[in-house]
Length: 544
Ligand code: G4P
Image (tube, rainbow, N blue to C red; front, side):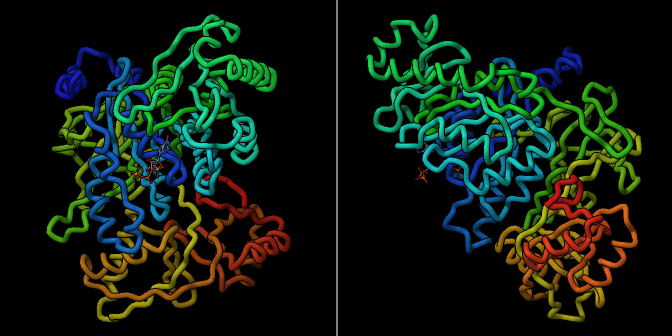
């Protein structure tokens, strides 16, 4: 189906809202940088018919070498808006693939995008196994029990023993795993995989641009076809591996996957287009449909007739000639219509959108309507901040878009006191866009910026100057992490705030945050104030 047809079919009304919703699967591919996320994304799009040539996504990737040149990165980010959401049809399902920036400095962007998906595919490099960013991303998935499918990539390289990799996944990611395919050989001896899900043999053929998977059906693991195809030695090895797999791991249970407790595992090589179809087929069969979302006053079900949605990402155009921003809205329930007034809950105002758009493949298209699970781009002139909710009038605010503890903290020094107002306005707006977090410390209303990467400081400085005419410098602060404090013991909190006044600040929503100078200081604070709870995020009760 070409894009035009796909668009038309999405716009035509004969399908009920329920049918539209049931057709959709909204997910993200996540990985530690270099594990193969971009390559796998590209292969999904290629096989989904959304792009015609490999390389289209890759060219939009923020290049690793551009780390010190943020203008270059912003340029690339500008391009990457086009790939923020990539929709394509596969086996009569409408797949919404939300792109997440691979660059570590944009990790918070990725965390927020994870609030808008219903499941994820996690890519692991078979040579490196679990890496730091894998853990951080999985922690975010575990907060809302997002279902995870794991793809162990680069099986054409001399990787680690698959059993050892699976053990590491379970131990470090706090999730149970269940292999649904199994590699035959590895690296130079890699012959393919035995597919436990579809019962068949998928032989490895390296092919960078076309679908390489071709399933040879087998009766079971003792089928002589296996020897004929891979030889006696590897066939015997495979049999004993599968025996072990069946003995060690429980049967795959879809409910447990859907509940985010059990991750099915597939093996392959994204670069060689191998195991990708197998993964995509399993994904369309098992990945959840658009799910409901908790709001402050109640839980919102996706099949409710009235429209609701929330903003999870704002992309600003840093070109001063085009000051527009694009706010990304995830639709949670009902149907979103172009040109209809919706209630902006925080501002208590009604707004309508003349040209909301969606991305079919690489084309930006203005849409007339969108359904639960869809993500649309809205042109914004400064009315949105991350987490904002739109409804048909109900006073309801979606939850679950927390702030995460930054890793770098710097005090903002105003270099032009005549422009104090501009500086404050600029800082507030950039914070609302999610560029960085702003904390205020007393006495003196000291402004502290927290980020996950160096790059954001450059971005802030540049944008303050260009968009608001304000100048600032940053002074490094020796903080280790920000911990949001909750307690049922006000007396203990009061005492803590007095004793630690130097290291306590207020976040954008007025919450108390302990800026811990070191993990040792944090531990000691936890011991001295046992009734205080310290959390790594502003919303979930994730203890540190
Ligand atoms: P990322 O988005 O997770 O950061 O990873 P990306 O897809 O960019 O892949 C990182 C590197 O790993 C790339 O090589 C890519 O070609 C390679 N790669 C991906 N899948 C496989 C695979 O199955 N087998 C092998 N052997 N390599 C794989 P690069 O040299 O960094 O980039 P490029 O010059 O190939 O673009």
